[in-house]
Amino acid sequence: MTPTTWGAFLGAASAAGFLLVLARVAAVRRPRLDLRVLPYLRDLPRAGQRSGSRSFPPAPPSAASGVFGPVLRSAAELVERVLGGATSVGRRLERAGINKTVHDFRIDQVVWGLVAFAAAAAYSLAKALASPGGVVPAVLVCLVAFVAGVLARDHHLSSQVTARERRILAEFPTIAELLALAVAAGESPVAALDRVVRRSGGELSADLARVLADVRTGEPVGTAFDRLASTTGLPLVARFAQGIAVAVERGTPLSDVLHAQAADVREAGRRELIEVAARKEVLMMVPVVFLVLPITVVFAFWPGVVGLSLTAP
Image (tube, rainbow, N blue to C red; front, side, top):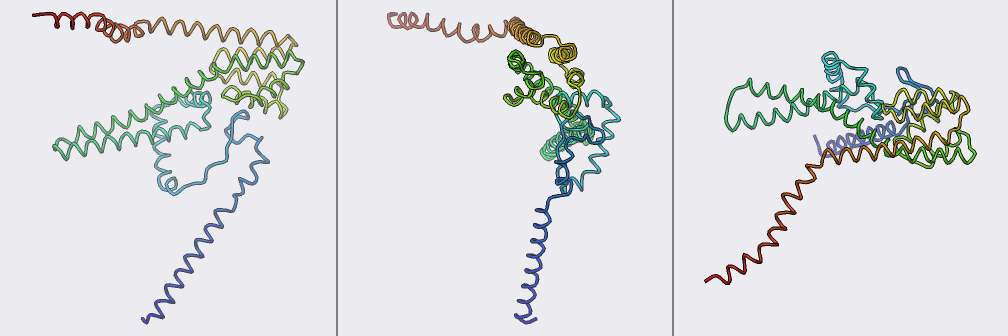
C-alpha cells in the first residue's frame, strides 16, 4: 500500500473513533427517563418500600456490576439461606438510616467476605512461596477468612446502629426544648416541627423531617408519630413520639411534656456517665499508678541519690 492509502486509512479510522466518542458523550449527557420523571413521583412509595423511608435515584449500572452482579446476587442468596434473620437485618438497616434492602446488605457481606478471602489467599500464597506446605490448611484459612468477613459486616452494621442512636440521644434534649419553646410561643405542633426541622440538622432531625413529609402528604399527625415510635429502637424517642401523638389527639399540654422528656434524657445521660466512670475506675488508675507515681518518686529521690554519689569517698 502506498503512503497515500495508509494516510487515508488512518484518517478514516481516526474520524470514526472521534465520531464514536462524540456519540457516547452525547448518550451519557442525555438524562435518563427515570431521572426526569422521578421528581414528580418522589412522594409515591416504590414497590416493597414504606412511605416513610428515603428514596434515591438508582445509580447507573457499571461494567463490573454487569459482569459480577449475577454471581454476587447468587452468593448473597446463599448467605441469606445460611444465616437468615432478614427481619432483624431490615430493622437494623432502618435504625441505622441506611437506604438499602436486605439483599443489598447480603451483597455487601459477600464483598467483605471476598476481600478477607483475597487477603488470606495472598498471605497463604506468600507463605507457600517462602516455605511450601500443605494445601488444606491454606484452604481452611481462606474459608475462615471469608466467614469472618461476612460476620464482620454484620457486626459493623450493629456498630452503625449504636453510633446513630448515640447521636440521636445527644440531639434529643435540644430538639425537644426547641419544640417546647415553639409550642409555648403559640405555634401548632406541625408548625413547630417545621420550624425545628428547618433550624436543625442531624439524625433525629432527619427522622422528624420524614414525619413532617408524611404529615404534609395528608397523613394524620398521630399516625405519623406512632410510626416513628414503632420503628425507632430507642425507648426515649418512642415515648417522645407517643407523647406528641397523644397530645395532638387529646389536646393535652405539649410544652410541659417536652420539657419533662428533655430533662429525663439529660438526667439519664448524667447517670450513664457516672456508671461508665464507676465501671472504668480501675482503668482510670492505670496512668496514675504506672506513669505519674513513678515519675513523682524519681523526682523526689533522684536529687538525694545524686548528692550521695557526689559526697561518697
